[in-house]
Amino acid sequence: MTNTAFGPWRGLAPVRADQGPQEVCDAFARHLYGPVPPAPRGISIEREPCGPAERLTLGIGGATFDALLWLPDRRRGPVPVIAALDFLGPLGVPGVPYPIDEGAIICAPQALGGEGQRLAERMRGRSPGRWPIEAIHEAGFGLLLSCYGSWVPDDPDAWQSRGLAPRLGSGYAAISLWAWALMRLVDAAEGLEGVGDVVLAGHSRLGKAALWAGANDPRVAGVFANASGCAGAAPEAHLVGETLADLTRRYPHWLRMGAGLPEGLDQHHLLAAIAPRLLVVTGARDDIWADPVGSYRALCAASGVNGWPDPARMWSEGGVVRRGAMCHALRDGEHDLTPQDWSAALSVLGGAFS
Image: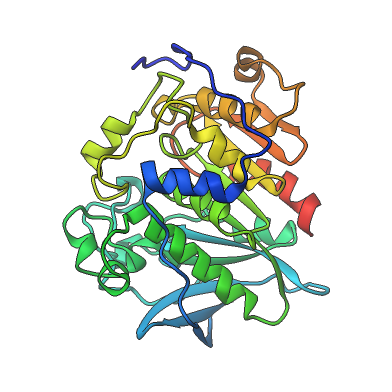
């Protein structure tokens, strides 16, 4: 693999007009992610104030999972909500007295205080730029946020013995379980008065999960995937950055055993399965490992429309490019979810849903 943005390009098979989302999801479940568990019979919701937000305790099959909901003060009618999983969850957002989930097992960057695998007080308020509540509200959205490690430990040993895996049975890999968790946040949003459309958002591994959940759940109105990389928006056909072999070696719990894509199937098919719903893919110039150029090529191929700038022009100009329901944004910088990523995404989402 090359460590430059542009590398060998094998090309992508056309998206077939007769290949529906279910057929695509079945193929990805067989070859890459493994299946998504079936929906639970029901979900209960307990609500209580938590500073400027509202704490939701979701009861699912005898287990409980917490999320925090922020809604804008000024609203008319149902409010669209961005639902997401995060490394720290609500603990990383300043200004909320959110309790620490001592059972969560995470793998967070050191910049967020992630020296260990457990949530800790030193992490409180460490990710304000990742979840800019004021900007999200100004765009007309609420935010529903939960910690991914509370649902599925991000650990190759502990993930099968704690969280969702022992409750849902064997045969499910972590990304599919995180996708299932996102779909339960959609369940919760549907059960709340005054909440409208739900858009899924995610960064890095959780961008992969957001794409996979969006493809599987037609209730999802749109997806914002930032720096999702290999097994996300970046195709295997672009020989740049992380590969499936790299990913499965470092994180063997994320994908099904023996994960690999057959000829003719690549990540642009997954992106196309989200259409005609809105899809925003963002990346950064210094984040070669997540292959921003390949992700752009996949988005162009998934869109089925012409008129996208060629990759070299996209790379040199950066900024937001939109064709139909699909949008791409490139910024300077490294692997992170930043206010600039949100500005690009909200400029598109705000006009579509609010």
